[in-house]
Amino acid sequence: MHRKYLFIFLIISLFVCKAQAALYVEIKGGQGKGLPIAIVPFSVEGADKHEIEDMGQIIRSDLENSGQFTAVPFQQLRQSPNQMQAVQYPYWKTLGIEDLVIGRIQKVSGRFTVNFELLDIIRHNGQSTAAKPLAAMQFDNIQAQDLRALAHHISDRIFEKLIGIKGIFSTRIAYVSVNEGSKGKIYTLEVADADGHNPKPLHRSSFPLMSPSWSPDGKKVAFVSFENDRASINVVEVRTAQVQRITQFPGINGAPTWSPDNRTLAIVLSKDGSPKIYTIDLMSKQLTRLTDGTGIDTEPSFSPDGRSIVFTSNRGGKPQIYRVTLGGGKVERLTFLGNYNAKPSLTPDGKRLVMLHRGESGLFSIAVQTLSSGELRTLTQASLSDSPSLAPNGMMVLYGSEEGDRGVLGAVSLDGRVKIRLPSREGNVQEPAWSPFASS
Amino acid sequence: MASKILKTMVVSVKAIVVMGAILGLVACGGASKRKSGSEVIGVGDNVQFFGTNLSPEQEKELLAQRTYYFGYDSNEVSENDTLSVYVHAKRLMNSPNMHVRVEGHTDERGSREYNVALGERRANAIANILMLKGVAQNQISVVSYGKEKPALAGHDESSWSQNRRVVIVYEVE
Image 1 (spheres, rainbow over the protein chains, first blue to last red):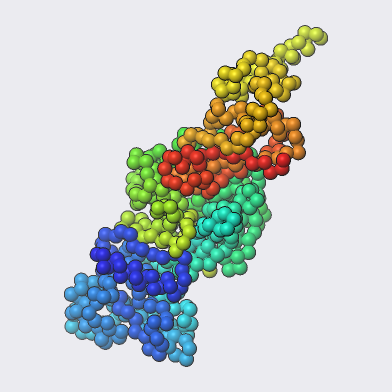
Image 2: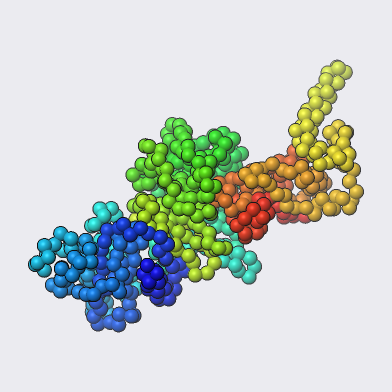
């Protein structure tokens, strides 16, 4: 167990050195109930394998970190076939795996050609080696710097083939990093690959930055800034880092999230008294107020069909989750367990609610509630979690957490099977937001 | 005619007394031990209005306080703090060109945007006292940082109690 942990850590550390990532991944807990799979390190022809990304290892980490697979560690493999003809099925059957991934990388005049095959081990008769693969693909003319992205793409293909749901390995995350500068704290809105690699700063400020939220087309991130001690809602284009101001009313300008059609932001303004939920049309800038009353209404999030918004409100005394329909304005309470439920979002099927929850233990945890039954399940036990953000396939939740005196990111699968930590090399990271599939 | 004026006066005195009862009650707790009684009547007299006869040294000391602490999940201004807020109100009324930023803050527990809302309630509690004492709205701006700018970084009540605060910042003085 310890050896396995150390091995994963070492391998990932190697990548970090290569990619100079701000975040790194550690598996914090898992129950090993995932689909058993083996990935053979990809063979490399025409190039030094230490000079290019270890695609096999990236795929292995992706699948393992998803919580849906248990991947055999490389050092336990006694065979390393890279061609289908070389696969000795009896050996792979003894490992108890269901599927096997093999692959090849060839350097051809400066570019790379990559092949992979996904093989069904458990249903193979054990005799013939001429079995048809579950998936087989070839990618030509790949540049060295794109091999990592290609590995994530292959992970997505394998995931979708075996689990039946789209993979999230090619998605990205946005988050706020906080570092001590010479004149106080520096806040940076960053985007990175879903595994923390390739971080890119989008916006920097000596004032706090908050509440990043991806547009559904993956091209923009909305966020809150406090430039000159005034709250404002802004949208930054991911490709150009160009920032556009959306609102700067007196009082709160907060919690922006996008409508599924990219056209509208749900936001929170307190210009007329208590913080209330509004929508703003991004073209016409027209504001529509959705909630009333003297209580706090905040943290709006659109339902996947775009017809209603879930939000946090203390109208009943303590913060709980409510839903308002966009046309009629009818408000309905969704949570009844615990004395603090906040930062809601709905799973892509609209059937479950992910949120920050405080139960009788007094701890803040990430929780998921099934709307039809009201059944609530806590996924984390840390004392200081916040900012849950759902993966676009609804299978993982990213969140912010504290470890010692550092803000770190965590991820947990919605079935609770796997917990991952993404701490920063230095400084704090907080408020993760998971991108949609169509990330730019 | 005379009775009508008298009636109007009575009504306005009543209104002042009611307002004073609402706003001043808090003050009475702390301030009344020094001097109580006629403060709600003497609207024309600044010193009287602010609840007590303060020496310049006392006023200076009260003006030096810029940070006010709050209980968990509470936006109730402590009785011990109201006299200081009154003296800031007096200063702002006497100097209409001055401008303050009233900053609300919370401890680190709970969701970030909900904490922004809680911090604004605290900042508004202080800003409302300033305005009800007569400070012009355009002399005050309110901002809530929620839990984004803690005064102390610790993860226990000793830090949390220092982070649940409102700070009056003079932007122009």
